[in-house]
Amino acid sequence: MPRLAPDQLLEELTPVDDLLIVQDLDGVCMQLVKDPLTRRMDPGYVNAAADLRGSFVVLTNGEHEGRRGVNRLVEAALGDQIKPDQAGLYLPGLAAGGVQFQDRFGHLSHPGVSEAEMAFLAAAPLRMEQLLLERLPSKLLGVSSEQLKVLAQQAVLDTQVSPTINLNGIFALVPGDVSRQRRLQQMLAELMDQLLQEASAAGLEGSFFLHVAPNLGRDADGRERAKPAAAGDVGTTDIQFMLTGSLKEAGLLVLINQHISRRHGVFPLGEEFNVRTAPRDHQALLQLAEERLPMEWMPRLVGVGDTVTSTQAADGHSWLRGGSDRGFLTLLKDLGACSNQPNRVILVDSSHGEVDRPSLADGRLLGISDPEDPLELDVLMPGGPADYISWFQTLAQRRRAGGHAIPETA
Image 1 (spheres, rainbow, N blue to C red):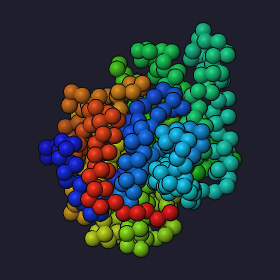
Image 2 (tube, helix red, strand yellow):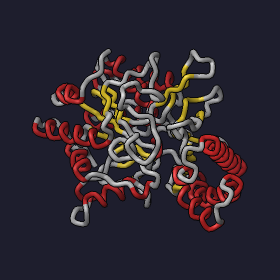
Image 3 (cartoon, rainbow, N blue to C red):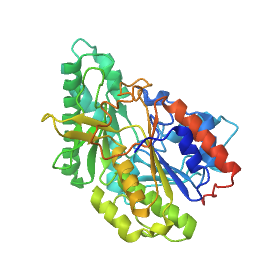
Image 4 (cartoon, rainbow, N blue to C red):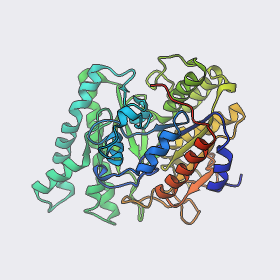
């Protein structure tokens, strides 16, 4: 199928009565940066999201709250004169892969998460720093102990329910050195495996998993494959220590369940349905949707992401496909087929920031998609977040003028 131009999608979506945009954040509405604390959010984007309330939710592996949370970016964008908790201007939806829910007033919850799991997560960032400081000296010869401490502190993202190690700052010390970058990736994988073992020893076996970003899909045992560094593409930069069940595709069903409840007063999957009780593979999620979601109540879905990968396997014939947005975008398209609606996928080019990523600029989608890729990308945004924000604001203006926004309950 030929792709749509962004303006064509605007025309298509403006009159839709029941619309739900499900959007990733980093790399989509803001540039990817080496230090997440330097991220900035466009105030025009925040206001457009408010204009689309009832038709817009986020689905991110980042988090809403904490010093690194997206709520801090919303507050900084709006300035001191506007209180987003009172005006309902926080971004509603799921964070941390689906275990952290927030409404637009900032009311936060972690459905299905135990106190013991929260306690282990609270201690994880300090443990990550310790493990990094044990391993980095042999990988960064000649770097002083003081600088190593700074690098370790910068690399650990102390988020509440998905603590992460991000190698971007460390990779900056070895630019273009693919072999050393790969050794650092291997070190990171071993470190995070050790943390999983420590969780099991604490009686929390099965509570957590490792989300690798970007990745090349999953191995036969379900573990996400790292994307090795290559010339011009640093590959895997982050590993998140996440609660089992934190899968965006499961989060998509949670968000649809909530959306149908707001419009029709019924939770078709149950009021307590969450990602920790949801199935964990694509086919089971699709089957649940087909059996339990009333297709006549399904909204028109638009999925927006930036992280989709495809690399040819060693056999030269098959493809290793992954990326943290691929799962939920694929399920979203499949749900469109079930409900006989043209659900759409927008892919935003996140190569414009500070992190090496494959680009959409030449249209070949190398490292992103392949000629046999079953995921149909309806609209490409090669201009990156700036182009997407402009498109998003225009859609919000048109729908507001048409009276389509539906007030979201607190």
